[in-house]
Length: 105
Image (tube, rainbow, N blue to C red; front, top):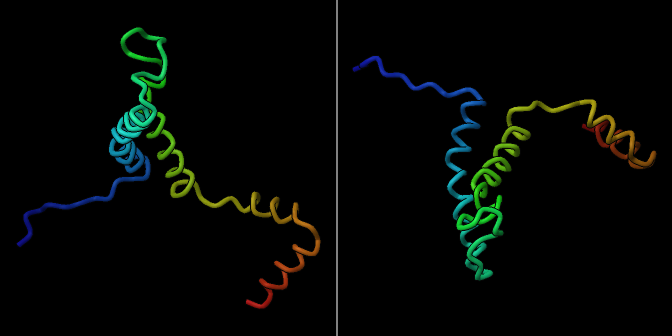
Protein backbone atom coordinates (compact mmCIF):
# COMPACT_ATOMS: atom_id res chain seq x y z
CA UNK A 1 0.00 0.00 0.00
CA UNK A 2 1.73 3.17 -1.22
CA UNK A 3 0.61 6.43 0.35
CA UNK A 4 2.89 8.53 -1.81
CA UNK A 5 5.46 9.08 0.95
CA UNK A 6 9.06 9.21 -0.13
CA UNK A 7 12.38 9.73 1.54
CA UNK A 8 15.13 11.63 -0.21
CA UNK A 9 18.76 11.79 0.76
CA UNK A 10 19.86 15.41 1.13
CA UNK A 11 22.76 16.73 -0.86
CA UNK A 12 26.17 17.08 0.87
CA UNK A 13 25.60 20.68 1.97
CA UNK A 14 22.38 19.71 3.75
CA UNK A 15 24.15 16.77 5.38
CA UNK A 16 26.83 19.22 6.56
CA UNK A 17 24.19 21.41 8.17
CA UNK A 18 22.57 18.39 9.79
CA UNK A 19 25.94 17.27 11.14
CA UNK A 20 26.60 20.80 12.42
CA UNK A 21 23.27 20.96 14.24
CA UNK A 22 23.93 17.58 15.87
CA UNK A 23 27.55 18.33 16.81
CA UNK A 24 26.99 21.91 18.04
CA UNK A 25 25.63 21.07 21.50
CA UNK A 26 28.50 18.67 22.12
CA UNK A 27 30.90 21.62 21.88
CA UNK A 28 29.14 23.15 24.86
CA UNK A 29 29.20 19.85 26.76
CA UNK A 30 32.89 19.40 26.01
CA UNK A 31 33.76 22.96 27.09
CA UNK A 32 31.69 22.59 30.25
CA UNK A 33 33.43 19.34 31.15
CA UNK A 34 36.82 20.88 30.39
CA UNK A 35 36.10 23.83 32.71
CA UNK A 36 34.84 21.53 35.47
CA UNK A 37 37.96 19.39 35.23
CA UNK A 38 40.14 22.46 35.82
CA UNK A 39 37.69 24.00 38.34
CA UNK A 40 37.23 27.26 36.43
CA UNK A 41 33.95 29.07 35.90
CA UNK A 42 34.74 30.96 32.71
CA UNK A 43 37.55 30.93 30.17
CA UNK A 44 38.05 34.70 30.39
CA UNK A 45 36.46 37.93 31.67
CA UNK A 46 36.06 39.71 28.33
CA UNK A 47 32.28 39.94 28.75
CA UNK A 48 31.54 40.38 32.49
CA UNK A 49 29.25 37.61 33.71
CA UNK A 50 29.40 35.77 30.39
CA UNK A 51 33.06 34.83 30.09
CA UNK A 52 35.29 35.30 27.11
CA UNK A 53 35.02 34.67 23.41
CA UNK A 54 35.55 30.93 23.93
CA UNK A 55 32.60 30.83 26.34
CA UNK A 56 30.37 32.42 23.69
CA UNK A 57 31.52 30.32 20.74
CA UNK A 58 32.51 26.94 22.22
CA UNK A 59 29.73 25.14 20.34
CA UNK A 60 30.67 26.75 17.04
CA UNK A 61 34.37 25.85 17.37
CA UNK A 62 33.69 22.12 17.73
CA UNK A 63 30.92 22.20 15.13
CA UNK A 64 33.14 24.00 12.60
CA UNK A 65 35.93 21.47 13.17
CA UNK A 66 33.68 18.48 12.48
CA UNK A 67 32.03 20.11 9.47
CA UNK A 68 35.45 20.93 8.02
CA UNK A 69 36.56 17.31 8.48
CA UNK A 70 33.31 16.09 6.91
CA UNK A 71 33.65 18.38 3.89
CA UNK A 72 37.33 17.53 3.41
CA UNK A 73 36.63 13.79 3.70
CA UNK A 74 33.35 13.27 1.87
CA UNK A 75 32.44 16.26 -0.28
CA UNK A 76 35.69 17.30 -1.92
CA UNK A 77 36.93 14.77 -4.40
CA UNK A 78 40.46 13.44 -4.42
CA UNK A 79 43.05 15.75 -5.91
CA UNK A 80 45.40 13.81 -8.24
CA UNK A 81 47.84 16.72 -8.57
CA UNK A 82 48.38 16.70 -4.81
CA UNK A 83 49.18 12.98 -4.89
CA UNK A 84 51.66 13.55 -7.72
CA UNK A 85 53.31 16.41 -5.80
CA UNK A 86 53.70 14.15 -2.77
CA UNK A 87 55.16 11.36 -4.92
CA UNK A 88 57.65 13.75 -6.51
CA UNK A 89 58.76 14.92 -3.08
CA UNK A 90 59.85 11.37 -2.19
CA UNK A 91 63.40 10.12 -2.60
CA UNK A 92 64.02 8.35 -5.93
CA UNK A 93 64.34 4.94 -4.21
CA UNK A 94 60.93 5.40 -2.60
CA UNK A 95 59.43 6.45 -5.94
CA UNK A 96 60.82 3.33 -7.62
CA UNK A 97 59.48 1.14 -4.83
CA UNK A 98 55.98 2.60 -5.28
CA UNK A 99 56.25 2.25 -9.06
CA UNK A 100 57.31 -1.39 -8.81
CA UNK A 101 54.53 -2.11 -6.30
CA UNK A 102 51.94 -0.61 -8.65
CA UNK A 103 53.30 -2.51 -11.65
CA UNK A 104 52.81 -5.83 -9.83
CA UNK A 105 49.11 -5.19 -9.35
